[in-house]
Image 1: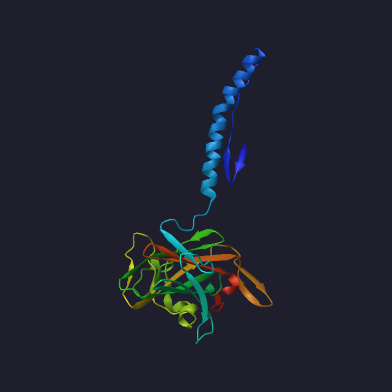
Image 2 (image 1 turned 120 degrees about the horizontal axis):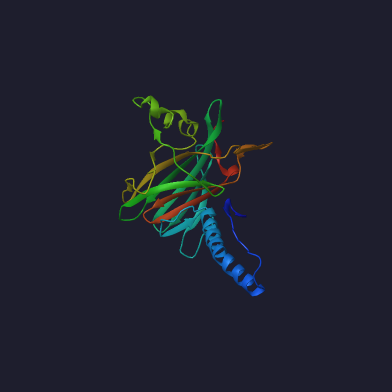
Length: 251
């Protein structure tokens, strides 16, 4: 039995006695040749499956803090109202800024909500299209939660599956600006950003880890590395946050 990243392969070999040594060696070679080939293919497939894929659809990507020769420029400023950090990525006439916050899912309920707000400024002469966004925690992909302005009119069956905007501190207390919410899949209709205009979009998800918060004398923050991206046309703008860099919207 061979284990590799949670995959297992069992090799079966039968050696019969009472034959000359040459026959025994030939039998062993033929007995194990095929299982070993299967093992190699299986382990390769398992290794490929185990690699977390953050984003594969876009033609290019820019990562905040990792400026390169293609001309992406990273910077950060402070919100004049809240004094919280706003991270910016600028490429040509496109500016994408990001803020990230966290809060408890519900009073008395374990877990944390992670919220990301992005503003896309279009200084070009053409429309831009925001196609989707996504996030990962320590390499683990997480999906967006459906968000509604109000649960009024939402069926009882669906109420536990959606988040009401008014119930989230990050937005109601002014830590993050509320706007449209990102398309939840590549098949969703993209959001348009008009020339010489801006669009603010948000993304809300739940931290998938059982104990996502680490506390110290400096406060309590999400553990690990959290990545968030938004796709503008065919380019990913990726923002990487250590938990301590996120806004505590109130727990």
